[in-house]
Length: 516
Image (cartoon, one colour):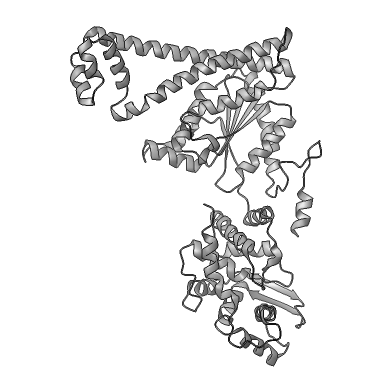
């Protein structure tokens, strides 16, 4: 089943290489094609309407809904359209203080590939000259940020602007007072009372001069970046706008994520620049409130930065399970699930629904199941109707060691009345079935049989022959019979219990590997 699906979903680009959309089980490529058409058209509309500045699109989806897969595929599609495009993994570099340096470094690296060694005249020479101007102006902004970063610790301890005050006091006070200005906060506070009007004026002049220098550097950078884009289009024949895709922003430190948004807003607000950011907007909102306070209107704050938000459609549970299983590379032949013609993905999806699992629960539960499958060395197969609910119970903090009638799984399975399947067809030599059965009863039947030795099930089956009344009983007995024969062949082992009793312990081991 999975090999056929994988082959059907295999995509190739014009060079015959696998596409980033290979294995797109959630239909994300359709979303990317729509968004790309929308953005290019919207940028043209804004130009005709005389609207200036960059365009910022927020791609919003919860954790685990394929944002990175989507962004990689969209990046590939943009490159095929001959638009300049840069991909930035924000989380990979959030160890730094200022994301500006990360963004400008990626931009500079991209354009550097188009700079010819020694152009004499024409578009090539113009492009190289403007490229140098952008690097120079970017460096000035970087230096300003670096100076600010060196003073940050002082501001946290003493207060905003105190470092500048110290510098001015040291410059203008007599020789004997300079040691005081370098001392503790209490010493500084005492010395400030002796600061005369000339020192205050000098401090004000210094701050105003720095502010004007920062404004001019920013203006110069924006102007040179706009000129670079026009020269780039003329030099290469590529089409504007320039796309900057920033992924994993919601995984960054809250302060870094917020600073990234602010830098995009203030430093890169240039015509023909499009930012596409992938975020879990709800998580970003929580992070902002953690910094600015619980009462802060974080969503309204975010609206300042985004021109538009595109909500990636939530995948159905079926799509999510199918994607997780197909992408894992595990062997589903190690699994067993109820049904005349078993469909493991469908069973997992339906079990997720009937056990009221959230999408996060599904992803974590399937991940543990996949880890268990990777390490599975038993002769029998993993029984999904028992293993998967127990994994969910483990994640929910339930006591999964208790498999008796007063245990969580027994009680929960007994409550599932609406999961009914029509079992039609033959099953391993038994009479032809055409029955409606509750899948919760399969769980209960396994739990009942696990309380007795495997050989007891074998003897019941031999005495009753093939006239077993329900598919549910036939399925459970058949699985236990298979396990018995695989483990003991023709040897009679009357006291051995089923391997399914080991499930809780195995789940706890695999649970230590789970994703968050």
